[in-house]
Image (cartoon, rainbow, N blue to C red; front, top):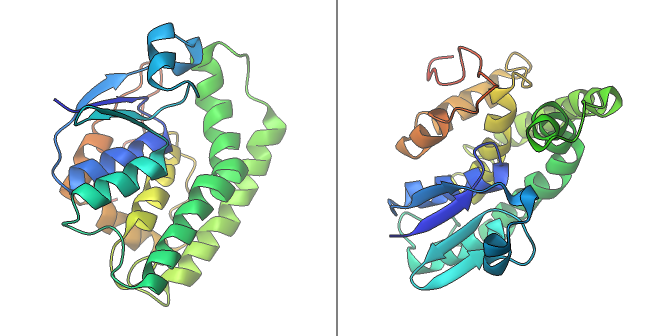
Length: 221
């Protein structure tokens, strides 16, 4: 059995979970308290980060490398466009969300509101929370601009870029940090992603001590 070591509210883990589910690759989910630096887990990934995927006798780390590996061994349905230009744009936007969006938004909201408490690292830093709440508006506007020109973020075909963005936004939506009224275009895009069978496992996540808002698992939100 394939096994994914993850934490439920990690956008990087969710991106991998969405890729696996979209390609109908079954996987056992194992929650990993990576911050405790368990010796067994560090042998799997010396970087001490999730996700880590055990598949086909291999131990794979780093979310984008995992997704690219999955794409190569299971190319159907494709999550990367068929053209070089399309693949570039999908990879560019995936990096945008996993780097820029993560550091400007996800880290400042999710880490402060949830991770600090779970890891026993104190109280939220209100300055970071305010910065994250401000920055997400810029990113939602950028997404809206992209989607006004395309069916999906990277083009006319759904790609790993959409899963990367949806992974981050779904984590933030769990803690009510996404203003879906800011852009009807982005809200419609997320509704399409949210209604895919691959998303069911994400919507079923429950984190003890943190209840999602009523609309979180509602496909018609």
